[in-house]
Length: 163
Image (cartoon, rainbow, N blue to C red):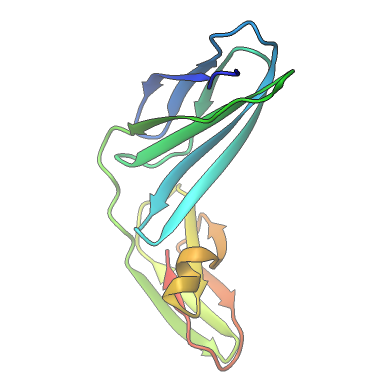
């Protein structure tokens, strides 16, 4: 039986998490697959996937948000097949930034100008859809470091926007 890998949180800060991965078996490990999950504004679950080569590993994941719960899941790729999943939870330190204040204004039938307030030198995600269900499951999205963006949409539709 292939055991799940051990995930150990080495350290965390406002914008990063460092963790180690190891197996408690003599089975040869060729690498790991790691998923980092977090929830955006209770509407959208985000995920970042890391493919890691080798048997032992210490990883640092940066560009995270302060005071946000993250779930890290991992499985090992071995000579006998994939291991079961293991999970660990961690909340980054610091104070979570205030939610941006979004304004969306139709420029014409197929373009919407989105602008918002918030800190500089960060990456913003803009999510939009024609229903709450679509906004949660599979929204259109884009990213920018600016405080405004023009989004192209389908004519004769109403859209919901999040930033």
